[in-house]
Image (cartoon, rainbow, N blue to C red):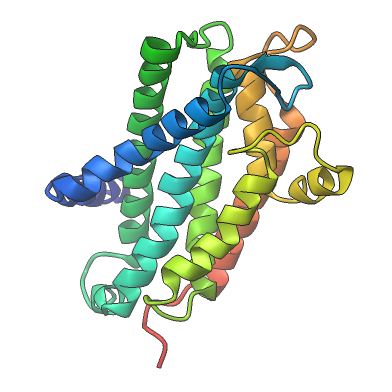
Length: 259
């Protein structure tokens, strides 16, 4: 088999294993929708400042925000925690003694995570259109797809890099959530930060979640001065963070559990 065929075969195996656990699959897709309903109910009914500075309906605000949350969850949180558990259970160590190259296994996990993420995006878009009347961005679909695919790849690379900081499986959920949850709040994923102090926005701008959220908003709700929806400055920052995560993962990734 070629390397591409090996990766596709591993991704197909990961996909089968995912769907054979229906409880985990159900809550993977229900979790973002639950957040969307909760925040739209609690904070809906008015307007909120978008990252582009425009006032939009609160229910409209939370569609691209929850889309960003779904990408981060599927591609960063799930990858980091899942790989950490596989390493602690000795699966990664045993894998090194098989003919399957280690990078093929990881690439298959990443490809599966991106596939699940795409399903999540479609579900959230359909849910938002049916129940909240939010239009799907057709004029800026190129910017939306580029931002989505680049963000998914970058957060998968960062998820692999995050496993280097996880000492064991028991600590994985706590360590990974400490990395990501504060940034989700500070970046405006759950609560609009248009009126937040400048230092919060500056601090959040150092990390990729804020740039990914900004790029998702402009590709979903393009302002008049940017009809194409491309936010190249944010796209470049996301790509740089993804490259940094990949370099860290290549250099420090561990296949065996800590002693």
